[in-house]
Image (cartoon, rainbow, N blue to C red; front, side, top):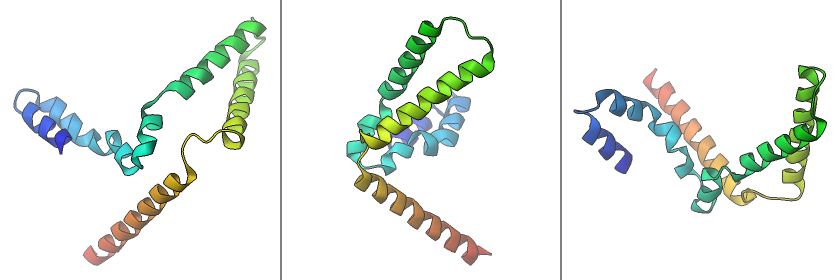
Length: 120
């Protein structure tokens, strides 16, 4: 795999970096367990940027908040609104693809638990 080849090439000159790459491999490459048609959405930060811009616009309209709780209420309401919008009107990733990923993950967990029991 290209990730490991790169870490191995860096190992002699940058041992700390290659060690970090070894430790982070699973988390960084987690997206490959998803269907390829989801990869673009996973790598995109567009929804987060849109949400941050909406927070900026709404807080600008309010101007000054009386306390921290008022800010949290506004941002919480915006987050709930975004969540409702995405769950009802938009599908960021296909449900079929997500079901496949969840099935694969549960099957791998079962295999891990089985192998742990076999070792013990």
